[in-house]
Length: 285
Length: 285
View (cartoon, rainbow over the protein chains, first blue to last red):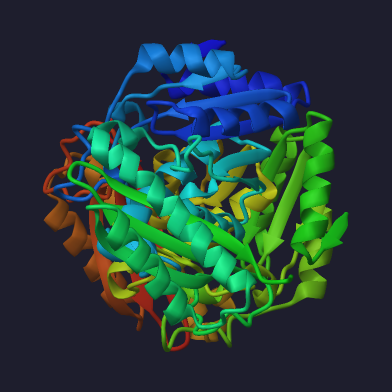
């Protein structure tokens, strides 16, 4: 595995592989890798000749008071894990390397952002867009891999790629879960023992909702209530939101009578960690 | 020469050529081709295996009251001219093809725009940036060609490419002029006979400034005055601006004592056409 820190090294590696007609799969991450990331890398490994992973804690996507400084980092462990997952090239740039100058462009994401987490994180997806446009131009992947755990991010990225005509296939990978159902996340390490145990109830609440919809419940308001009350009764977490939208448009729906997909998404604040999860329901059954 | 109107056709042509390791030179235009454009195409022809030209009158870069509707168009003539200049692929998309959806991103250029023409055309370079990002992603050129006649545009494009890490070399081509010095432009056809004759004085004014600087004049204010009075005395055009900046930063300078380059740029409004011109002075003599 090549570990590169400069754009120049990365570009020359990409150029060599492109010249040989090799396909490139790209897994952008903020590091502190867990099984979720490795699942993305393994999918990229299966579908491409060259797998590039980036590790970059992107300051632009953290708001004031958010956890940029305290976001967990462990490059040595990440490097071993990336290699074990079949990554060919690990790109670990500095902030200076990714932002050598103040951007001469101001990029704002204006669709699909004023819902879910985006509503409380103004500017977050602007930072995601800026860094992904840069990374896409550096890595020039045929396919880029994203986990559906952050489904809003995936929806926004579809918008960026479609609207700017990036010749990249966005591959959506289902959320990887612990045995008890908790969605894997770098932030889970910040849960207390009790919180960690309770946190599995987030997934149970989503499954309960899924079952109720399968059994014929049409009202999204009732399903939201069902999820909220389950979480309130079984955890000490503070519910930030429980929301239901058409997916991936993230347009509001009142009833589960649409064709296509719907997303039930939740965010719950524990003492030192805010957890998100979602289920995407295929309404074509 | 291939003439294509759909993104799909263009992408497949680009893909085939990339697969064969061919280099791509790209000449984006708004059509109504003149020798300036053809000079760009010929330079691209010399330096690349495949030459792609686009013709697209981009509505996003016209402000309210600007000449989007009346901008001259002549596809048949353009096609013949492009072929004669050695273009391999002429991409002529519809507005619908370039903007199939409202953009989910709002892109604003925030550097180098509040001077020269940009000052009076808020949003103009935002439209330029949006369409170029799309076109760069479709054409994936090794090199893109721009005329220095619109030097501010070239400066802004350097910013876009550098900041977003597009792997594209921006090739600057000197302004192509009529025999009497008038910079070639699609808009010249709108000049009256007298205006057309007077318009050559714009270049004479710039040359006069260049000579004065070469002879030791250091004050940019005095040079601006010199240019203004020459234009006022020899044309009926209304001077929009005569400005001097460091190039390509477009930062203000008071004296010609910098190292690097300086630009003297002018814009003059005639009855039905607003003409721009500039000279870039190398200050290292």
